[in-house]
Length: 127
Image 1 (spheres, one colour):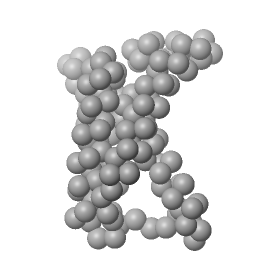
Image 2: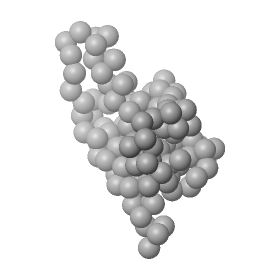
Image 3: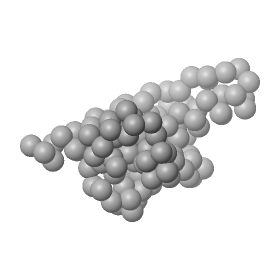
Image 4: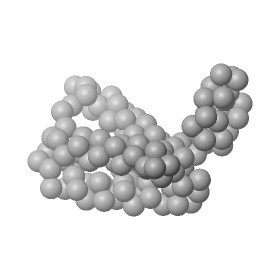
């Protein structure tokens, strides 16, 4: 039962990413650079969350980061089959960057966070 508590959020989150990637994408802005910035920021946030959930389940930075990169690559490949979407190596690298940011949040920010947030992170076994 304890493994389910750790792995269910991971399964739900990869399902959310898969669902979002299965839909044609609309422009976030009529201005190209703003559209790019909004979409890539979403990528970073999605994969930072994925890293954090994986780290909580595995307690291993390398395994978590490796899974993030592999999932990002398979997600980009999946997008090549979705109308209006493409799969790009650049996006895999951006997603991997999100994983690294997730690690930095756990490693650098949470230990320095306010006590209430730190206690919450400890309850979730992030630190």
